[in-house]
Image 1 (tube, rainbow, N blue to C red):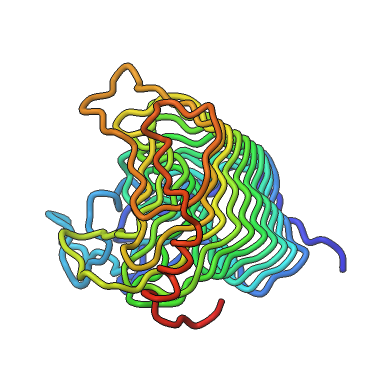
Image 2: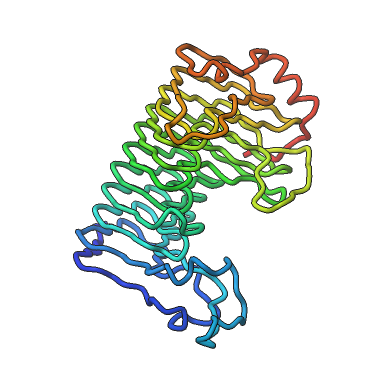
Length: 346
């Protein structure tokens, strides 16, 4: 089938006033559904003009917008979204200042993103750069992403994802998750993240899951990661909570086969934070050639943490607190079998 091309060489501008949007809200501004063999390309810009949205809560319903006495839309829109689409390419364009996520792929396959620029301020809330969910066979490469949330967010149902040669920052780094919210099933496997530069970010490379989740995260590789003034460069957080308090639960998404290789640079708070579930340990974690030093602006430095994390390490490991993995793989497997309830397979 011939390739259908959307050429953007000018600027596509969203309404700047909230009153111009439907009161019932939109989940996305520009939405592509059920397209195949489709490309967006050009030298142009997609401008979400999101600044008016960033100061209001995520969901507003029938509330007046200050002195203007206009209804605030009930949802913030993603700038560009693809749904149930296959063999899709986005290249060369810029997507800026989205009210929410900049570029989203949902239930897609055969996705390629290259040489794009995504930009919004570091304090613009929930403005993920690229959000991928229930999507397979993805390549994101040679792009620059700065935003107020994850530069790239990989959610449940994703596999065979290759992210490389990305300049990320500001933002929250490259993240898998959050996964397993509300006891849901989460399955992510075969993800490669390599040759990435991350600066002035909350995290470097991160896996985050909710307590009580089901499923597994397996065969994930992070390599050639250069960080600069990143708060915590290496993170596994199985106690993720986006509010003041979350219920303690014993179940967890299983995390196994995670490789970290050649991660270097500077951190602002802690070099590594592996907080794995009490009931479901993280297993087969590899730490190879990790060299991290405090940044010049670092304050209140903490030692590296490996909680209920099993695997092997190979020098150099700087600082020495990174060498914190437990080495008893057999014990980890025994704990998983005895403590972890039976899960629905991915």
